[in-house]
Length: 356
Ligand code: SF4
Image (tube, rainbow, N blue to C red; front, side, top):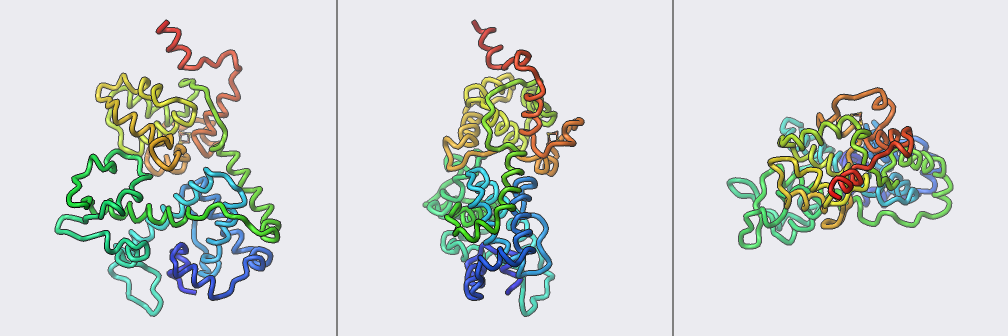
């Protein structure tokens, strides 16, 4: 099996490689523990780290772990897991292809494991839609719109682009982000699917473990209580920065907005909370919040995990509880659980009584 397929298991060629080897998934899940363990690690790392973890040294194990991971995601059967997993596969693929494009020194051996931009564009039927220019690239609007549909920053909106003769100008980084989105869509396609009983049975313990991680991260529970004093330190710092009128980078603004939406705040309430910011842009906040909430986009977003917050430099002022939780939502839920109900004063009720 080619190393390229192990590195990019969502490629059509990788699927064909698995098919032509007549790999029987029942036998794999029953008899090849390293494949199943790597598959489970792909899904758990997606939840905890936002990527798919360290690859196996054995290309066969690595390649087969991808279809098995899709089976695990299907068996766990949670919408939020499908989204998070697809995003993590796409994030890992993105890191790898960016490294491949930068690697001009690789001696092209008999069996190369890298891809070129042209190969990826052709994989996703984008070669005709993307045209290189002197300053960057032009992407046909028909290809651009579905790929940018899940990107929440306002810069991706068509009204903020100099659309000309049916083409949208993008720079190289933006083009690579669109290719990442094409990977995410490919991974998400068809998930979850029905899994035959013998395969499901062999994976019972692995699915349980994934469900435990999901429960621990608590991405699925509905919280509807807004007590800023109990927010995790990272979110308190981001909210303070917004209220002081500081300019936040996109990832930070995304993190705090997704957090506030996940704890039950409506778009109007988030707009209200941000309003003290002198550089506050109501229209942009509304657009971003509706997008994150999934009202103006195909996806409802969850706030980033602690691992992602750390990697963006947004994890600050950690306290003792931070050492024991993997996600800002888990932090907040723990603090809510530890506080007596009659001491929980919801910010929204306080605002209402002040206005009365
Ligand atoms: S450890 Fe997690 S919850 Fe605590 S500050 Fe860092 S990102 Fe926030």
